[in-house]
Image 1 (spheres, rainbow, N blue to C red):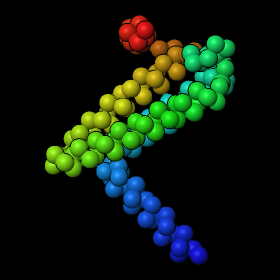
Image 2 (tube, rainbow, N blue to C red):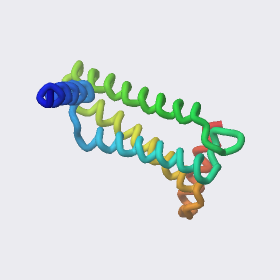
Image 3 (cartoon, rainbow, N blue to C red):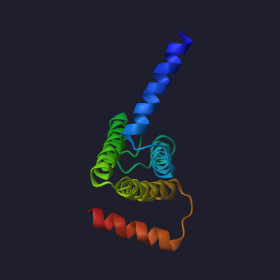
Image 4 (cartoon, helix red, strand yellow):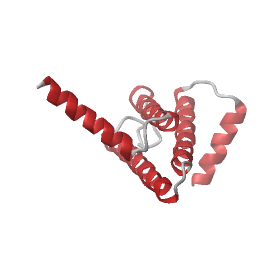
Length: 136
């Protein structure tokens, strides 16, 4: 039974590695940024009640699920980028997609830090304000 479980886990891991183009710094960075963003967003809502997603600022599981779905779709886009690399015989499309999504996640993490009251440099605060005004 132990060998069956280990074999199944190995096969799933190998399939995932192939689908995502291998486990390297780009994918590890993206997954790490996604996890930190999700945790920091939940902390903002659960502990500080300052979420911009709800009127009360408190945690709402629907928005948590939406966040996870968005991150899942981002990972699906990475899978598409892997296929583009394979079609083009290239090795940069996936990395570019991962880096772009990492930047987006880092901006969200910094915004979450600001919502918790962590002091941010003025330049960072101004940049976030400009980005927020462009979203509207």
